[in-house]
Image 1 (cartoon, rainbow, N blue to C red):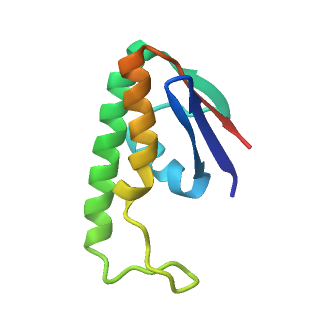
Image 2: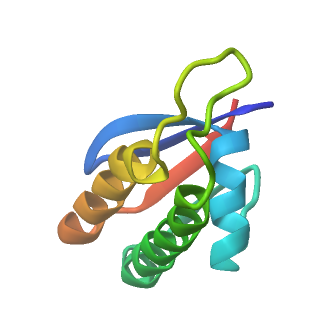
Length: 104
């Protein structure tokens, strides 16, 4: 399991575990490289795709009984996990900045 760092001059960096990120990325159909960036003009489409994927995958998870992590802790909702990343994406869009990421 790797760690992904998202960063932009538009806001604070966001770190996500690949295990949490990749199911949503696969659902979006967006291409994901270990290190790359999204252009400001491509951010609206990317934001919409991530929001829709999170919503769709959240509906599936809500159908599961009280889901718990392997260590017994209660699972964190996808919308909560993706909130910081979506906020950074929106900020980069508003400010016309690139959104970069890299695998650590």
